[in-house]
Amino acid sequence: MDYGDGYYSKPRRGGSFLGYLAMGLLGVLSGALLVYALFNFYIIPDLTAPPGADDSPRSEAPSQHRDDLPAVEVVNRIMPAVVGVNNYVYVSSFGQRALVEAGSGSGVIVSADGYIITNQHVIDGAAEIRVVLPENGTVVAELVGEDVLTDLALLKIERTNLPFVPLGDSTTLQVGETVLAVGNPLGYFQQTVTAGIISAVDRQVRIPDSQYAYTFLQTDAVINPGNSGGPLVNLSGEVIGINSAKVSRLGVEGIGLAIPSRTVKRVMEDLRRYGRVKRPQLGVMVEDLSQVTGDTADQGVHIREVIAGSPAARSGLQAGDVIISVDTKQIRYLAQLFDALLDYYPGEEIEVTVKRDDAEQRFSIILGEMQ
Image 1 (cartoon, rainbow, N blue to C red):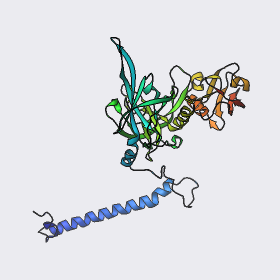
Image 2 (cartoon, helix red, strand yellow):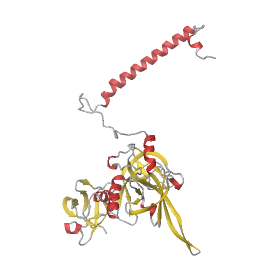
Image 3 (tube, one colour):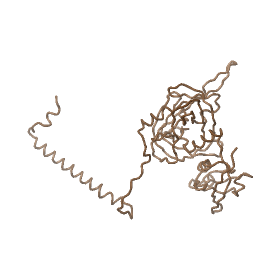
Image 4 (cartoon, helix red, strand yellow):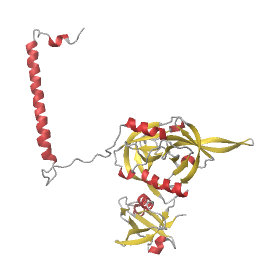
């Protein structure tokens, strides 16, 4: 049966009534469209225009990433550079020593000559590190260097002309931006991709048993055990973070943490050049001001103690001072202080602004090096 035959057939008895009904509905629809047009093009601008607004033309806001790509294309670009990282240790049994896998994670190739970034906790204590290349087997990797405070490690494999993913600029990220997380969850589901958004930036994470803290990116892209060390990428196909952890508590979902590429760049460069991070220091013991006052609204970093003979002591800083800026960077909490210091090297001079007795004072300090 052709269901289109009756559409053009002559009206049967009662067809005139249907015609009137159709005309009535058309009239109602036309009226609704007219009201919609009046409301949207005349009423809304009057209601939403800010006080003092004029009629001058306004340019459109620039797009966040003018070279954003479809997610499928981004995945196809980055997938060949995402690797598995396996940690092997020696065990003894009945007088025999053997290498056994103690853990696994992920990594990302960041240069064509074989440099790979991963998490420090993925390779911690390894007697041998093996990298699983997509479709190219397994190869033993050299540990170039590791940094516990930022949970980053740099590996090197003896291969050339490798596919790699460039590091992007995490300082330009905005909350709500789409990101993709790639890795090997549980060590079995190789090259799994999850999607989400940037949920927050500059999220303070304290280093256990230390006064140090750094800022992390927060994302709701699914991150599971084994994803550690894998890349968090934007829709331009750039690594803007290294997936490091997730909040695992009963009833908590969608809170993953990634080390921002701003930190990754500095640590990677130091590990490649020196085998360690040349971390500057002031020579102070510090804490968030809000911890001292009990008021979460209080901003700044409180100096609890100044180490004798340190750069801070030589410059005149005192216990009780509250650091509020380093050069032009505002300091509201601990992680921002250590992030700011990581922009400098030992021996460089910085200007630190503190509050002392409700007055601001500035001090020039030659940075020392943390041993």
